[in-house]
Image 1 (cartoon, one colour):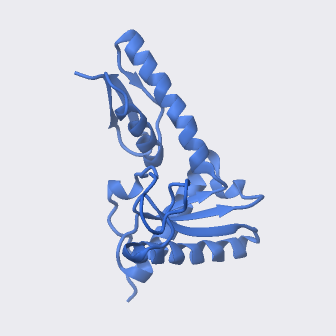
Image 2: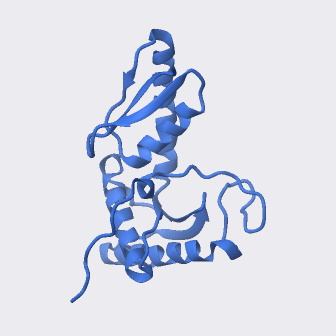
Length: 192
C-alpha cells in the first residue's frame, strides 16, 4: 500500500525568510542569493527536485519559463521566469501557494523529509514583499498617530511573515497574528 499522507504542517514551513546577503563562498555578489556550497548540498538537491517537478507541470500546461534552482536564506528556492505565467500566480498568489505545496510534496516524496522550499513565479513574491512593506509602514503610522491597534486584512503565511518583519524592525510597535486560516490576520499595536 502506498502512503499518500501529507506530512504534518509546521507553521515555520510556510513562513518566508527574507533573503539576506551572506558573506563567504557560493554567494552571488549583490543579490543576497547563494549558489550551491558544500554545507548547502541537501538544500540545493531539494530545489533541483522541485524544479524538475515544476518543469514537468510547465510541459503539461505548455508554458514556457526559465527555472532557476538556488539556496537563499537557508532554504531551497525555485524561481520561474518568463512570459505568460500570471495564471501560475493566481489571485493574490493563491495558485502559487498551491504549486509551492505540490512542489514541497514532490520533495517530501523523494527525500522523506519536509521541505521549506520557496517557489516564486515571475517575481511575484519580491513585488508582493514591497507592497506588504508599504502596508506595514502605513499600519505602524496609524498606530503611532492614534495609539490604537490596527487589524490588517487576512493574509497568507508568507504575507504575514513579510509584515511581521517590517513591524518588528520598528520601535514603539508590535505585531501578532490572530485567527485561523484562511482568515488569519495581523494586529499591529503599540508596544507595552
